Amino acid sequence: MTMKVDVVLPFALFLITTAVSLLYVKFEGKIKSLLGGKEFRLRDAVLLVVAMGVTVTILVFITKEAILVFFMFIYSLVLFTFTYLVKPKWYLAILPPAFFIVLYFYFWNLYWLNFFAFVFAVLVSVYLGSLFTWKITAAFAALLTLMDVVQVLVTGFMGTSAQKIVELGLPTVVILPTFPSEGHIILGLGDIFLSGLLVIQTTRKYGRKFGIVSTISIASGFLLFETILLNFVFRYFPATVMVIFGWLAALGIRYLYKSLVFKTG
Figure: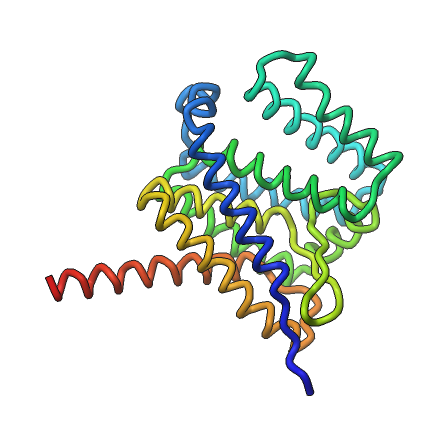
């Protein structure tokens, strides 16, 4: 039996998290100015995770039409806000949302879905990155992973809501072909957002070089876990676990390296 392997998703995740890191460095000043220097407290992080968990649950029970209206509003708001951040002219900021809506209803396909999914993941990560501190990020990552595990492996709501979203073709997931093995794999934007957030905070704390190291480590963690999942036929698995594994591996490597340097020095 030939072992199944996929390099497309890990490489795509590496590219997207690298883009998040570079864009955050470029727009950090503007974003902080726009947000007025505000930062999340632990209560805010808890409420955000609860809101995400409740949203996943609600999506299971509401109609596809309601889901479509909700996400169209969110996408348009994100595109307008970030465009206005770059070019503060409202008549320019309305163009990307209008372009997105026209594409979705008249020219939509898998390529546009993946493109806008990556765009939204980058924009949300870059925009919200300034609101988190190192400690709040750690707490948020732990809570989000716990929620993901419960919604995927216990309630099953994550899989059900994801299926409805895929049927609508909404860019809240990326759908990529696997290679060299044949098939497709789906990853939610929440998992990409978490990856981007962790890379941003790692870059802020330890510098750009180690930020890139963390992107490589997260992608490598995905390669390892995805290989296991492809060969043992898991239908759904909490991808946040893969993200956290790769990120902690990078921190562990850094700690060991610093310990060795300190001892030899």
